[in-house]
Image 1: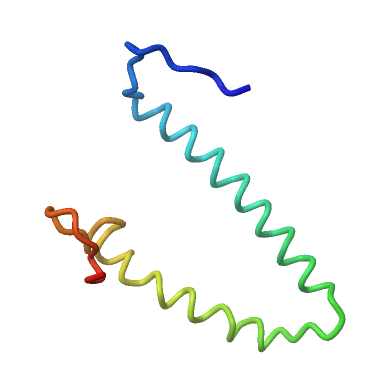
Image 2 (image 1 turned 60 degrees about the vertical axis):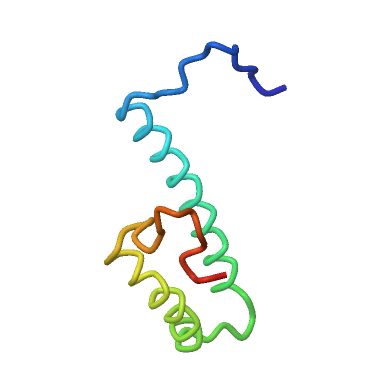
Length: 84
């Protein structure tokens, strides 16, 4: 059963606590991705060159995020940055 928040709960966390929580989430996700990659590499017919080519579109999609920051394309009006 999830913990319930009191109505007057302080929802502001110190940066150190946020960083610790984020590191835990990232570490667990990375471990999951490593297990998925290992399973794929062990599959019959695994082609390393094709796997490299399949990874490139995802990396290219993240370059604008790295340049502008996660919310770099967002507008203050709350509209969809992609125009949708």
